[in-house]
Image (tube, rainbow, N blue to C red; front, side):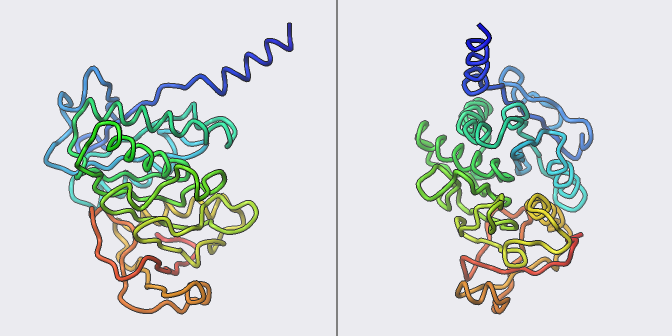
Length: 288
């Protein structure tokens, strides 16, 4: 009997998908979010403005709506950028399991995102999805599925992948791709080593390798280097000295010999013109 109960508990963990929640922040309500539902929608919100671009934040493994990832980025956007709608995607319960289980939940979270945003009818070309870790793959899959399932000719404006997860997301998976939006930018901070969190591979239109893409200054753990991706993105809202230089080869990247026209990392613009697919940016122990 105990064995059966144990098996049923394991099946429940793998098969029961928790509901994803969506929270809206704007300059009008920067601290206390409004929870959005399919019933109330966005258009009935007293805070949402259709005139402003919308940024979607999607946390990673072990994250939640209360994660520093969301707080840092939201605060920086509201303090230093033009007015935006910021919607936090909260998939806390599905993200709370082991990495392998949470990774398997990614398509379910993406599907729920697609269903919700289809119901609220936001213009996709003005959307900027920002995903951290596994959240980066949620963003890519959601964008792809929306176009495939609903025949949408309009593409997502931009996806920013913050150190997208590597384990289980090899070349034959449904990982984030550079075709998932009009512009896909990836910030790599923990892409090498046996226990690395990030994917390391240049999967975006533009790929910024911070200090070479791993072993961040001031960090003694992979988790610290991984988190540096969203810290740098938050800092990019106001620190305009955060620029990368194009690399023509892996050797240039590894030896810190990348030269050419600089490109700002991060930010909120929906599209950037670049001369290269790979950039190296050097920072100190803190990007702030």
